[in-house]
Image 1 (cartoon, rainbow, N blue to C red):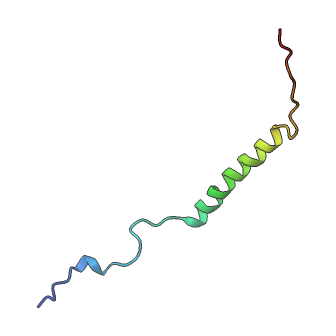
Image 2 (image 1 turned 180 degrees about the horizontal axis):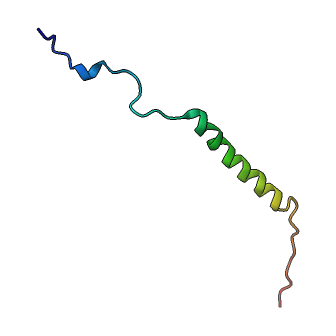
Image 3 (image 1 turned 135 degrees about the vertical axis):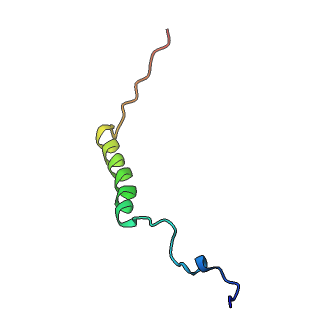
Length: 54
């Protein structure tokens, strides 16, 4: 005799396993490296030059 429950409903856990140990460093590291590279190639004190009206 069945109780009316579906046999496939017994599964627990995620349908898709996300490898957080692999993705977390990439999600944090890539923007961090991009920010450091942007800071390295841009000037910290830009020079302001006024043009004379002609």
